[in-house]
Image 1: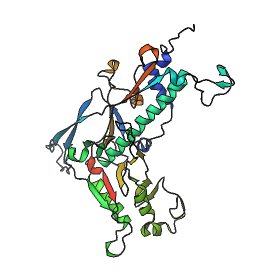
Image 2: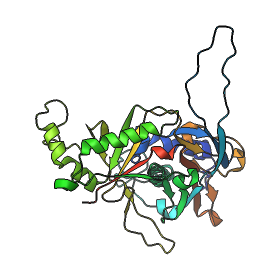
Image 3: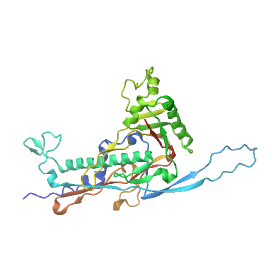
Image 4: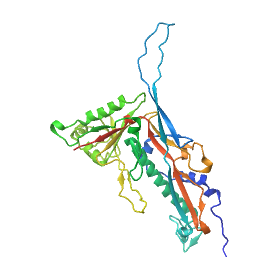
Length: 360
């Protein structure tokens, strides 16, 4: 009778090792993560309060040397409560999943059967964790895009947080009207300047180094085919050339960096059916946001729902996904896997979020 080995009772299968392991795999999703827009801020609780102080900047009067100084005034403070989201995900590894399975990308060596390497429990588990991590990654990308749109939605479209309503701000929309000619035409350069000027007027003490636009394919095509854009680049020699090159990865026009964005994902419903992939930025839309800010975009991370992490702010380096200790199934048939993420992408100045549309 074969000897039973408790393979999971090893350091390599501990929660810490598994959590660290999922970060050794490149993240395939996350344009907003690549941009570094959201500053990570770990917190020790599942909720918090952002205090907005509506201070007023005014010029200070001169005084004679030795005379009384002008007095500062307190701004009106408004506490904004928020709750960090909880996103758990369960899966499992069964003995039957690994038994007789051939390893991928293996060459001859130990554990050979007819010259083919058999899969190991570690290898199968690693691939399972990669898949689970990527699901968390695309979910986080959807939440971050929701944040720059001002409305964070759940995977089924349920509204989780309306930043405009929370801060009492009206969403600003600019219609570029691509394709319109004659009296109804709009100059794209003028619209870009309007977007930038609006943001500059609503910084409220914040700073920015530029403006970025993530565009749906329809909006982007309307932009690059606009007569104003074509005329602007007709005699332009240096750098990317929209009349000649594929500039979907980004080009600068009107002081704004425009980029086509095609992020989308489907939703697995309770009955096991999968929805049609939904675009994170709807057709015909573009989302403008400032870059180079210091305290506008933040990603709150709270502790996982684990006994050993209660009231402890997580390490920002590996707060995106946590892996719980593996849970054995009845009769030793396999192991249950639990991963979770506890994020909240948050925009402290939603007045800086601008929607671009094209009605034609």
